Length: 231
Image 1 (tube, rainbow, N blue to C red):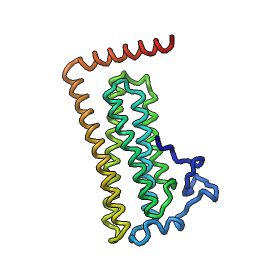
Image 2 (cartoon, helix red, strand yellow):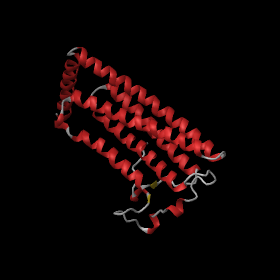
Image 3 (cartoon, rainbow, N blue to C red):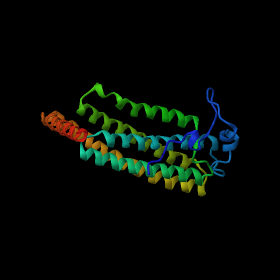
Image 4 (cartoon, rainbow, N blue to C red):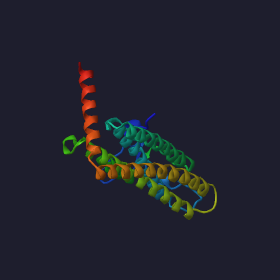
């Protein structure tokens, strides 16, 4: 099942901002987050804010890969994006489990997470510009978007590892290190797949006009399918 965006109507807990008001039952402040990762020696409220943002990035990745799966006419890329969607969903679950183990609220949406979600939404929205290029342009843009998303995912996992190294010895350090290993391995595996696909696509287009011919055939086939469905 695709994780849904965490909003007020889906149970979000929110830290108020300069232009963000929150009903009292949904409000979170640093005092409430002070016990997060207790006993680790880390800044609990700051860590809670960061984990919320890192989880949000993978959640937006789920929606990016779902969109790319739907829009590509290439069955190979559709399979790739489908796998990336599944692994991103698993990473969201890992983030939520970690947040819960550290004494936090998986549905907490920090100010950093709101900014992260807003930036990632812009990437998804850019694919609404259907008149901006041909199908090959959009296929390359999709791979670029996947590459950027997974690159940041790898960096987020490394940042979690760095946080764990700063934590005092104990359970908090152990669960953070274990989660970072799973998250980093998953994101890196997806990134390697996308890198290979992106390189192959570039080389194909550089070497000959084959790619244009193939995509022209795909466009014609897609048009026939659409006409059949309409009749």
